[in-house]
Length: 498
Image (cartoon, rainbow, N blue to C red):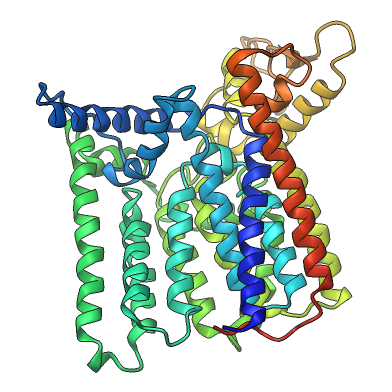
C-alpha cells in the first residue's frame, strides 16, 4: 500500500468525523417530526419489545410495521436501544442521518481521489456536503441510507480495480441489496445494480460463477425480506400500488413537463437546490470519453429515479426541494470530477460561484425545520399541494430567507407581518376573501438545539446536550481545518491507485 493511498484514506476518515461534527452541531435533537421517521421509531421500539418478550418468555405484542419495511428500521435499532438509556430514542436517532450523510461524503471523497487532484477532490466533496441538498437532509433523513448504499455499491464495483476477493464481493452484494431494499420503491434501481454486477464480472464471468450466484442470492434474499415487511404495512391500507394510483399522471404530456421541472423548477428543481450540478450538463459528455462506466452508472441512477418521478402528478413533496433526487447528487458530482480532474481558474471560478450559491441555499434548508413553512401555509389557508410545489410566493428558499432575516432582526419591536398575496388577472372575483397575513416572528425560531439554547440558562440534561453539540462543533471545525491545511500541502496530482 502506497503512502499516498494511506494519506487519502486518513484524510477521508478525518473528513468523515469533521463533517459528522459539523452536522451534529446544528442538529435539532429530534427527528420524530421529519417525514415518516416517527413511524420508524414506533416500529423499531416495537421490534425491541418483541425481542425482549421472546427472551423473557412474556406475551409477544403485535408487530408495528413501517412503510419501507423492516430493513431501514434495523439500522435504527442501535440508536433506539441506546436512547432508552440516554435522553430518549428520538434524540439518539437524530444522530443517524448526520452519520449516513458524513459517510456518503467520505466515500465520495475517496472516489474523487481516484479521479482528481487532492484539491479538486476536497473542493467537490465539501461542495456536496454543504452546497447541495445533502446538508438539509442530514437532519431530515428519509433518503440518506439509500444514497449511501448506492454510492458504496458503485464505489466497490467501479473504483475497486480488479479486486474480486470474497470480502469485497460480499461488501458489494450487501451494499447493492441495501440500496434497493431500504425503500419500498428501491426496485426501480434494479438496472443500476445489474450494470454494476455486469461491470464487476464482465472480463472473466465464466470462472466467477460461485461469486456471481452468491451476489445475486444475497441481493434477492434481502429484497424479498424487505418486500415482505413492506407488504405487511401496505396491504391493510389497500396495497402499495393502490395507494400510489391516485398520484399517477393522467396525461401523456405530464411526464415531459415533470422531467423539465425536476431539474429546473424554481420551487423544487434539482439545479436550484444543488446549483453545482448544473456543471454536470457539460461534464457528462466530457467525462464519458475517459470514464465511461462511471458516467453510465451516474446516468442510470439519475434516470431510474426520473422514470418513477415523471409518472407522478407531483414529483416532489412538502420537504426541502425534490428529495427523491437526493440519490443522484453524489454520482453527478463524480462526473464533474472526472471531467475536470485538475481545474484551471477558468473552470474553477464558475464552480466556486455555484458552490457558494448552493451553500447559501442549503444553509437556509438546514437552519429551519422544513415543516415550518407548512404550518405557516395552514395558518393562512393556502396549504394546497399546488402551492407547495409550484407557488413562487411560497418558494421554500425565499420563505426561509424571510425567516432568517426576521430572526436576525428580532430586536425590533412589534410583529413582522407578511402577507402571501397573489395577483388576480385581471380583476378579483367579487366574493374573493382577502389574503391573510402572518407574523413571521411566530415561525423564525431555528431548529438547531445549539442555537436555540445559546443564551438560555442551562442545567441537567439540557446542559449535557448543549455541551455535546458544542464539542461536536469544535471537532468539526478543527477537522475541516486539518483537511484544508493537509490538502494545501499536498502537491501530488497523480491519480490514486489501489
